[in-house]
Image (cartoon, rainbow, N blue to C red; front, side):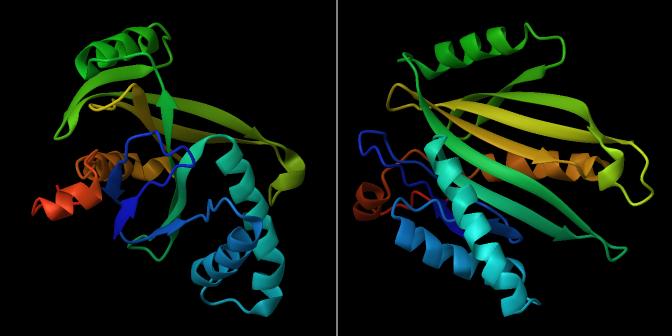
Length: 221
């Protein structure tokens, strides 16, 4: 489904992209009443096999989470849940934000981002050429310690997590779009890498209204 990003600051140029089936979008609505209503619909879709005993307490939690994410500057946030061939489920978190910068040339901005990210030896930073313009990806892998009280056998565990973050300078304004995919299902790392590349290939900075009148579609590759 086409996924337009809606920001509270109307001065930020528009952007849109498409996510695959399996993504459940958190309701980052500005008004609390609207956010509560959308959160109720969100949990019913996310936990489609549940009932009121699950949906009722879960909805306020996700409404509060959505509020905090919106306050942090995110324009889009979603949970990805995908079935595996052996009947299991893998998941990821996917977010997008627009950050104001002082860049006027996307290529120059991308070169600067690459130079900064490459300074950290834990970063695997690389240049990307997307249909919408230049971008920089940054991959980090970290081990997270899970305390004994949270594990089934009451023993401390180490969990490997991976993050893919892609910085895409706007071609039509002093902003940079930042897309982040985070997952603990690192055994499917290659699939998640392919997924975010596929999403970013649909990224468009065109105004959907203007483009519609010109005969095109801002949400097509």
